[in-house]
Length: 278
Image (cartoon, rainbow, N blue to C red; front, side, top):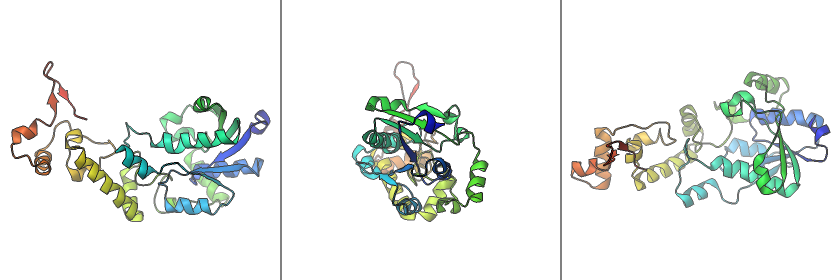
């Protein structure tokens, strides 16, 4: 249907080497054997992912102008569930900028499925990428497997002998940014610590230094050790524990407890309500 309706468009297929995009690419290649394939390099994908990408010489690797760690250091910013920009910068914007250079009209096949998340439930087979309008080109997104279930995808992968990213065989449920993704589960953090220890240690050293430099005892009401398991914003106390206050006093060199308490959970002088510090 896409070939018929958008015959004057430039066809591309996006891949992350994950199961959904692998199945999508296989389906598209049955109709468009010479489909152009692009991989958006976030700079923090897993080594297994990069090995697969580099084994396909015809694939186009879209690299960011600035790597994730350089970006994070420059802004002194920790992406969290409720405040982030990494997907927009390293995936969406980076890919759009590349496609704009290819053609004024582009149709992109993507492995997005409706049951992946609530935000993807209402996605249709064809939709216009509204962000492309600000870049002065037209981008249509086509989602061939949007109604497929996860079981459908795995059965198709196994039945047709498609290439499976080794990350899945190591216990991961998804393929994407490793270690630094704020939407990753604690289960995947355990896997990261085992399979990607160097990257895991690098990121958690950054988290620890950021916590200390920005006095985030007052933001999360947690200890430094606890922060390593709640840095993404999935946890936070209303009031600090004795352990949190004592650790804060030790790091800040404060000996007067009353002074230390003034840093935590300040109240409005007008209404008396709690004012969380940022």
